[in-house]
Amino acid sequence: MRREWFLRHAVPPSSRPERRSYKKWEIFMKTKVTFQKTPLAIALLASLSFPVWAEDNHGHDHETAPAKSESHSQENHDDHDAHDEHGDGAPEHEHKEEHGGDGEHGEEEAAGVTLTPDQKTMLNLQVIKLQPQKSATQSLTVPAEITSNQYRTWVVPVRIDSQVQSRSASLGQHMKKGEPIATLFSPAMAELQSDLQVAADAWRRVNNLGRRTVGNQRYLDAQSQYQSLRARARGYGLDEAAIGAIESGKSEKGIYTLTAPDDGLVLEDAFQQGQWLTAGSELVTLVDESELWAEAALPPSPGLHIPTGTAARLLIGDAVVEGEVIQSGHRLNTVTRTLSVRVAIPNAGHLLHPGMFADVVLSLSAPQNALTVPEEALTRGPDGDWQLFVEEEPGHYQPVEIELSGQLGEQRIVTGIEAGKRVVTRGAFFLASEMAKSGFEVHNH
Image 1 (cartoon, rainbow, N blue to C red):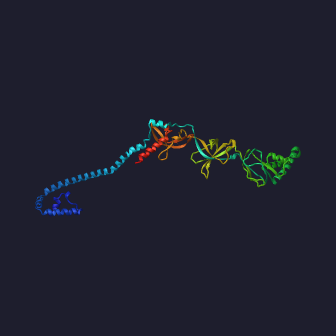
Image 2: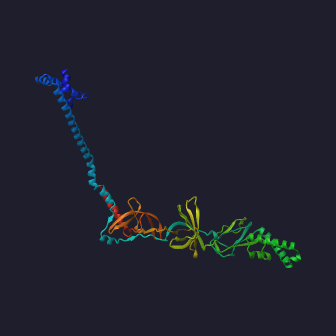
Image 3: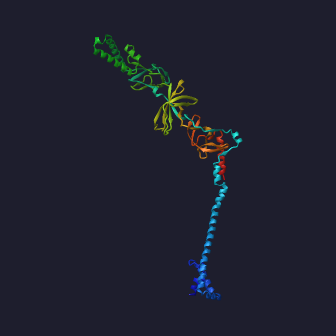
């Protein structure tokens, strides 16, 4: 009983061993047993027999001990937090000091380039003020192939089965209208010549006698027969001179000559003398090279419209020929996936020929109030985007990213920058080199 009372009242709660700690409890029990064997322990037990003193002392110790414990815990916690802050913050502090701090690093990247007056004079730095262009035109350069003018190209075929007797035209020859191309023989032509000669004689007699004398029916029959045979002769490819020779009996039966329907160059002549040609076979192809076409291939672009009559320039070698758009396609080529634009090109002196390749420069209306800069003002930024150097103040130049949206003569149309900015033209490459050099030095730790 005394042991239990001693444990409950003589030992303060803060000094009691935790039941979960077996070693502490064992040490305490050994100390307690040893303490009981001494005379001082017996006297202490006697003095603690007053319950009021024990209760007051117990209450005092109970209130004081937790406070000390809480104070000690708070101090430990504060020390631990301070240690954590120091441990976590020290590397970051050292890192910021090594890099000059995040703010300093960002300011250095956005600082641009600063030049002294002597450096500007040495570089011959030039600055222009961006001004919007009104009612201007932009240039679009695309590849093209020169082709024949299909509206001025003739295919001269054989209308009836015939054999080539002789040829009068050769490949590449410039022919005039009415000049002979080839002489042929055909049994069908011989039959037509005979019928036409007879019909022509009958019509001359009836026409001289008059309708009232020969009767209306006979007059109409002779006229109809004569006109029908003349139309067949024209269908066989004979001109008025050849038909007149047949009517007068001056033509050789079965022999006829095909002539050029207009001025042109012999582009193709796939026939030989003595060759038998069936009806519909192509004899020659004539093309008028005084005006050719340039078939330009445009990349597909939504909203791109090339109106008819748009001015165009053909560049082929050192030659420059002015032309205009006569047709703009509305369907992409299924193979090249490009949009075809046809340009009419005059060919004075026959300098150009079908099959040649060239570049076509189209003059299009530029966007209203477009901003333009010369080529030398454009540089590439660290990420590869186009940029301009803007003069924020005298001697200080800041890079600004922009986008290209077309060409206006020798100028490039830019977007992403405001009008009125002062932009470096000559010397922009040097500023870009200085920016790249400073960026390397900052990041090369």
